[in-house]
Image 1 (cartoon, rainbow, N blue to C red):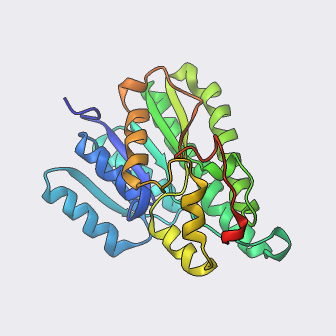
Image 2: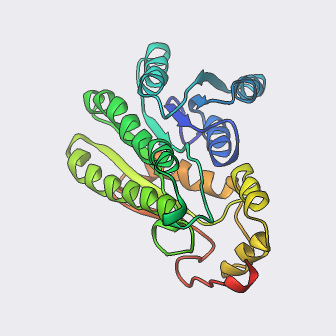
Length: 261
């Protein structure tokens, strides 16, 4: 039997990268997936492709920096299926290679809005439904950056560290209602967002990322997706308040190689 058969899953940032892989994996495991993103063409095409493959999928435009969009995404899932079993707060942006004193307030607030406030809002609108049905799994996307320090990543690390702290707190608060809340901390993953960073920052960033991971490579979105499916499934029924690191050993033995940057 598929691991997520009959479940409803909402995934933000689902049009590409890690979110795309998570949505695809959850759909294959039987979930009805609701894909939230701002890339409407890519999102609609992805949902159509999933349906053509025999899966249940809907795309909903969702700018996670806007509270009404997040509420609307959750409402769409409830209106169509009557329940919400899984929420993956995945959408994020990256502003890397920038020291704190060079970052503008606008950049700071934009990153915090997308990477942190959206997690609060996703949980805010999902939790009432999960509490009412006395079950649910929330997965918040954190990062290895929330565990270790790297030059130029203070804002991003601050947001992701806060995501982990929120996850622990909510796991304690809502565990008695049978709502499990966990986070995932990926290392460097082969995504369009990281491709853009390589072009923006330049140098030997791609080579440095490989050397920083003890496994000698960066990860694939599908590897993070498998972790998300596990946390969403009944197999993780006694797992809450944890941060699952899918990072190729990066946080166990960070190998910082600034000479390559």
